[in-house]
View 1 (cartoon, rainbow, N blue to C red):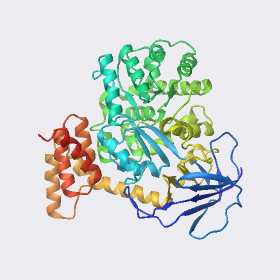
View 2 (cartoon, rainbow, N blue to C red):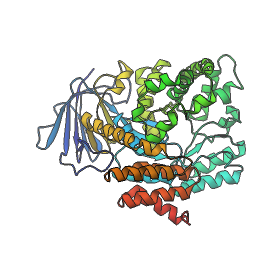
View 3 (tube, rainbow, N blue to C red):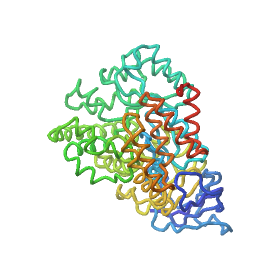
Amino acid sequence: MNRAVVVLVGWMLVIAASGCRTPPTPEIKRLVIENVTVIPMTGVGDERIATVVIEDGKIVSMVGPDGEDARHNVRRIDGSGKFLLPSFVDTHVHLDDVGDLSVLLAHGVGAVRNMEGQPYHLYVRDLVDDGTLIGPRFKTCGPYTNLPTIQSVADAENAVREQHDAGYDCIKIHGELSVESLEALGRTASEFGMPVVGHAPRNLDLQASLSVGAIREISHAEEYLYTWYAHHNNDGWERDAATATRQAGVEVAPALAMYRSILRQVADLDAELSGIPLELAGPFSRRAFRPSNNQYKRKFNPEDATWMGEYLGRQQALVTALRDEGVTLLLGTDANATGSIPGHAVHEELALLVASGLTPYEALEVGTRNGWDSVVGRGFAGRVREGLAAELVLLDANPLVDIQNSRKITGVVSSGRWFDRAALDALLREQIDRYVTDQPFVDRLWDNDIGDAMEWYGQMREEDPSVQVARETMACQAMRSVRDGAPEAAVEMLDILVSEYPEDPLGTRLLEDLNERGAAE
């Protein structure tokens, strides 16, 4: 393979350890990564020798390796034996604690789409956009749009208008719909330029759903089992389903790793929990993963793992058929669903795509270029090419040889900032330590009642006045209370947050929003 030198010009930020808050003003304005192999994701075999120059976060030129003269105020990194490619995109996350942003970034994720939104997520997006929060570029759908909320054409039209006016980026289906409501949802969303994504309505034959032309993306390959295979389980059903999907112009995020995790939790929950990095899950998610709270342990028996294994095999065969048919595949993990760890699940999904028959290059295409085009917009990033944003990940080993090498991240370029391995590890360590500290507080929060948690907190403060529950944890609890229809509990939590962190922008905006809506009365 060819070698390349990558030069990043402009206000590049070298971060040593800054958590998820705004880092100091950068001093280094130019970064040179020398002797690195560039995988530009512009086509198979396009790896080549180049010097990539980036100004104001964009790639402005790609010249030969000797095209960059020695200059002052340059940070040079030896890229020998390393590989540079676009950063990954997770098209299906459920952002919980904002610490998820740091964890995702440390796993090479440059952009995410949140699939169930509240005002909390709109504010998080704004704080990421203005650099207050460090993390991947962030898009969010609004609240779910399906039965029982959407019971008529008028309901569908109004829901889309309300979500558009609120500022959401996409419309998410997570349940049943009538054909008429689905059509209205898609038609109105199209008028506002908002894609309709998510689950296929399981009360409908997928052929009927596709014929309406409303759905832009199906976010689980599993949906095909209930909406296609259940109606058309003939030999070659995968090919037929893939053909219909292509003809409808629908993209698919298979989420195979999520389904496999469910299977493994059903088969042996203790083994699955011991095999995943639970320390990277926020305290609310970790609480839900435990055997005493685990939804899959309650719902299934270990014997169910047998048919689930068969179902996973059918989904993998479908993914191959979708690839063969030319359907655009996306990488989505359902992060923070029970068993899906933010960031970690991205690399699990890449490996499963290859195990399903994709080549490593095809899997990388799914995880990088396709995701950037679909979530952020074609022509922004997703390729190492002049004129595009420099959203990049630097690997210690070649992912085209072994897709598991996608995990060997030595650096990330995100939103005009350079994060070396030490910086990424610092981001992870900050969140891991905070999660451990705040777990006892979260474990006492149930049914939107913060009394037990605050009693424990008071006792801890008496013993050590320096003890503080993190603002991120308090904001996350408030978001959950709003989602659960308990805004009064959210206000109670936010009052405490703002009193302890009066300058916190997320808590302040959430409280102002709730007070404006009259939740405090």
